[in-house]
Image 1 (tube, rainbow, N blue to C red):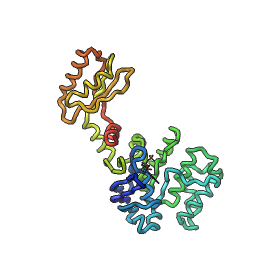
Image 2: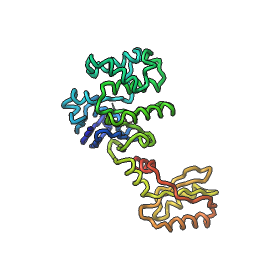
Image 3: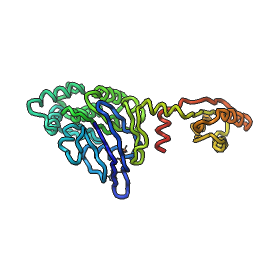
Image 4: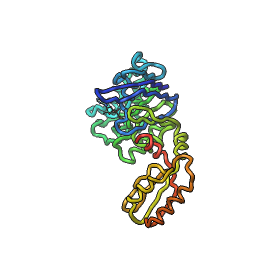
Length: 308
Ligand code: ATP
């Protein structure tokens, strides 16, 4: 339903995208995850025909956004990172205006606007000025303008950015409720955001796709590494380089100097006896062993490793 192939984009000296490719199948919700500046907005702007790519292509429901923009855009709803809201308009008037822009036929206009306002629980505020709504409601209005023409594909750029936790939950539920009827790609720099909402995750870093797969696949990849949490009574910062010098130990890092906590990983296939060596070293070195335990390796670790 979405096919992005070999996208490259440069802004002056900044190489924003290098050969970005991915596919999203019909009915999926896919999370496009990356740190600030990774290239999410640039990719989405190109996919939606807002800016051109230097090379590569993006197809929406089989239509190339550059070569057949009208056909592609008919099937596309876009919520950009800065929502295109007309604050001086009333909610229902603005959604009607958006529907007209999307060429919804006059005969269906009232029905589709009413249905959209209902789906996003905006009926009660339909006569209010957009500019007077709370941020959460404004974001719902922004979503409404993206879905009023019932597009096959929805592209949502950081849809919960800047909302409070209750509003985030509400928008998440709304997005989940849109799945099935639409194919959705949503961007975020927050892992839990995509983990909770999406079937698949595409991770982008420095303009390149570094990993993609189902949430389960990425989670099982996360399980394949082992990370230990160690807490000592004193001199934790002196212990860090000592640990780093032990073979088979990777990425030792200070978690909290005050409570004397640090973490370290074992290389894949490492002999578990290395943990005995660590405990001996801590005790014999006079650091005072307080805790040494295997920590569940999370999806967050995979994201951290791929993007640092
Ligand atoms: P964020 O989460 O902060 O929105 P992002 O992943 O959406 O980040 P992009 O906005 O796509 O990242 O930016 C990718 C890179 O391209 C960044 O280095 C950014 O500074 C640069 N960039 C984006 N748009 C422009 C522009 N119009 N002119 C110059 N550089 C740009």
